[in-house]
Length: 114
Length: 109
Image (tube, rainbow over all chains, first blue to last red; front, side, top):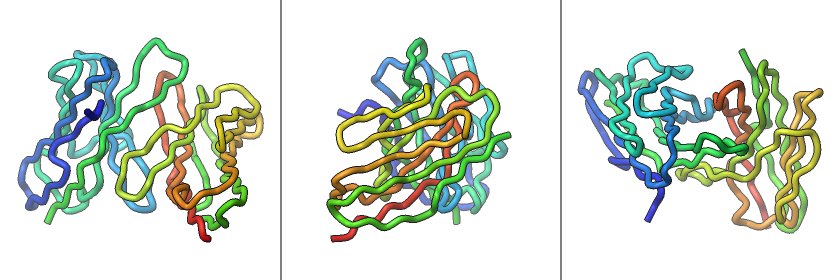
């Protein structure tokens, strides 16, 4: 079974709709991240959380919100989707108290906003 | 702020060696990652450098020079399955990771 899972894997939605992307992990990591990936722009950090009560904005947080419901779950919401939010979204996790800072990525959610 | 530069695309021959360069400008440098990403899939970890020098792991090696803001990923004995994008990422401060745009490597027979 995958350590980091994302649902849905693919989603098509219309402009103005609210949509939630979910991420769950069984790695026992306390740190979780949401990225989006666009061709030619690489991975860009949207939000990150170092613990259940900790939420931090990344470089492109406008138009997004997150919820860390439990250590294992981190959800990303688009309150009113717009076409330029069409992208591949990745959730990632990492462990605190280590020297490697390695991040483990989920399989991604391909979101299309029409 | 910070800037990470890597070539957009590279082509190399099966069985050969290829070096993918990454230069960066950042404050609060705390380490550098290399990730591999096949098309449509999640990035997977290849290496992490925090000190200057070469880290070798099988066919893949990664080098870091902090004074020059420079790293490279060396892939030896290239295989067709090595065709993928290679992402350089810099860790700044407290686990704040910034990714470069990636280098798309095509391995040809």
